[in-house]
Image 1: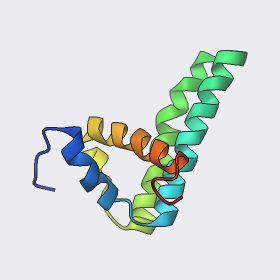
Image 2 (image 1 turned 180 degrees about the vertical axis):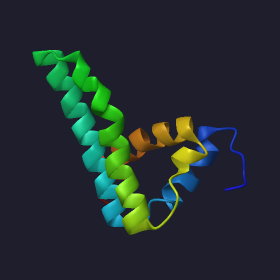
Image 3 (image 1 turned 90 degrees about the vertical axis):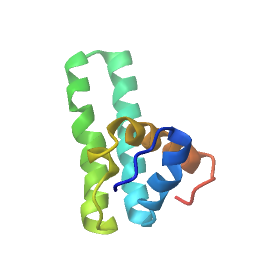
Length: 101
């Protein structure tokens, strides 16, 4: 990844090209869903300390998808903010059926 993206709109097609494997995308979806569930659990039942595991849930599922199934290096290492945004945009696109889940 030598290209430097200045806008998320330019980065997102690259991000999607790094998520062509269906299992990788599903693992991202599971991780994101668990983060949302954990957030609502904390809001309803408390336990702010549980929010500390969010990075492990999100990155754990995503990185398994990349290293084992996609066989590529997560874009997070080079584009941390754009990758985080990309995770949630891809999640939304899967929910609305724009991207196959």
